[in-house]
Image (cartoon, helix red, strand yellow):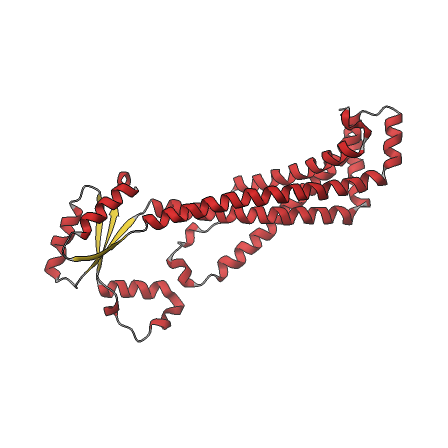
Length: 303
């Protein structure tokens, strides 16, 4: 395409964006809503996967003792468990330490446990496994041996819960693409309707261009460019509101929430997801324009 034709395309697109400003704004807003929902799913999925990876790399077993051991009885028990080939480290947590950690995790809401004492919590051992043994079979094996230790009353570990959490992540992935696909198609139709209005507003001009032998690509290009601008604007608007929503909720989460989720594990979309949303917006705008052009211009079959 020649420079003069490129300039013509940009002038026509700019003129149409000005003449049908509110129509294009409405279309961009519709795409923004679609991409906001899709981006919300991506944001949830991104953070769930981050949490899953973090928890999976730090799988611990919690062995709760039947009775408070004597000072001389803790070391032999710790040494016994540390001798397991799968075990990386063992930490003894007394009732007092468990109570202080629990109160600290509650933060400003620690007043809800006022009147209780450290005796309500058992002493425990926090057992961390070596990297090669952080799998279901190895964890089950270690847990089985721990349950046979006389001083240990109960053993808990989050592996089974993490597997259920993985299913939740998978469900979010399926939901985002199923719902996103439905919204994508609906938005294409809306973009197509906007392009139809632009075509009708410039019908005489288009017919004259066809009569003088203007290339089909030159006639289509302004409409496609308008759709692309709408898509980029909609994606940028969706990302802006997602960012505001993320800041709003992350600043207002109760302190007790961080007992389950480390603060540094919660983050906004990565550059990859941001680029994906922008590309999807671009594709929605261009695709909706091309779809409408093929249906309403006689040049569709020759373009």
